[in-house]
Length: 96
Image (cartoon, rainbow, N blue to C red; front, side, top):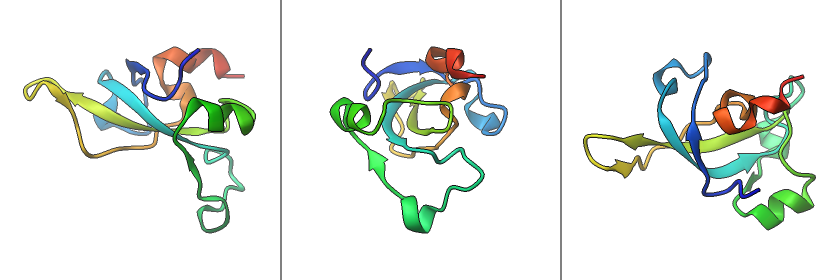
């Protein structure tokens, strides 16, 4: 299953401004949803499906960098956000 570049719907309660928006996945931040995640030590955004596969694939512990679709402008935003992977419609099955 293709992850990077996939388009899905955000269901995030944490990022309420994204809820219901169509979003494009542009990266995965491994283990960033874990309580012990240290962005100063572990800050690495995976930008390809190959890199993600090598890092163990997508898990419930990951955050996903997404860009929302701007309906009025007919394009994806230049601004990104990082909801938890489980807060995207395509990956709800990762919830434990």
